[in-house]
Amino acid sequence: MAKFNIAVVKGDGIGPEIVSGAMEVLEVIGKKYGHTFNFTEYLAGGCAIDAFGVPLPEETVAGCKAADSVLLGAVGGPKWDEVPNHLRPEKALLGLRAALGLYTNLRPAKIYPALMEACTLRPDIVAKGFDLVIVRELTGGIYFGERGRRDGKYGPEAYDTEAYSVMEIERIARTAFETARKRRCNLVSVDKANVLETSRLWREIVHKMAEEYPDVEVSDMYVDNAAMQLVREPSRFDVVLTSNMFGDILSDEASQITGSIGLLPSASLGEGKCGMYEPIHGSAPDIAGTGKANPMATILSAAMMLRYSFDLAEEADCIENAVNQVLEEGFRTADIVGNSGAVPLSCTEMTAKIIERL
Image (cartoon, rainbow, N blue to C red; front, side, top):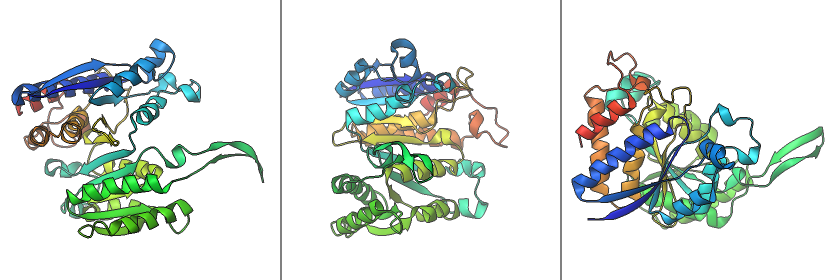
């Protein structure tokens, strides 16, 4: 028997609904395999602004740092659109990543056979199937570079600076190489080396590190071509290594071709075992409280937690197989019902179906 302490940040919008579903699944897995998961809830995002006046209270930071891992829902919503930039709900995510030292974001994207009709790509492309993971650098690049406003050549202008150190590139590249070794040993490194100096350094480092991984097939791809190939031939990708901004864009594109963004989990990792696990979709305040939220991405994020932070691969497989089984049996939430004729299940009903199959 193992005991794990999980910091739970339900957040805003549909966050409380989908995270509650994932917690139920983890509790069942705990009983099935003899583990104990202790949950402690903290506030972050818009709800923290309402309660404390800041998006990321110190209590939340301390609680997450003390936990074995963090399960997060979603933050933000129109209610907080007018707050000052430094108080926006999204600042909670950046703050947690920085506080926990999480520099790697893993975003898997695959097509479930039962949902091929929901994919927006041509049937002949979808028929080949795809199963890829995007390894995105999370704490560097243009999102964290120097920025500001100044007088420019044509008047007032704004600027944002992209910068990457050798160390930052090496550590994210190593994660990508190690991930490729555990999959199909194919790595595509995405950059814009024909224009950007940071990309030229990025490419140099990746090529140098490739010598340490002779079993991994490595290729380079410009980001504009990568965006095109993701919708033209997604089956060609296994592991995709990207900078922060490129990964943000490409992972959202990859999510769309799976049929629904409500199916995709993510893991944010650092040097230690503690990670932060969350669905890649937003808080969807327009459907909050209606029961229409799809809990699958959050439940699959919990499975990633078991796999990457707790080394519980069998338990993770159990959850992933249950999700796949529910889809194969024709159960759907509103976002993936399409033309199937199925009666859409609510968030709690879909969670219950998955639990039945555990």
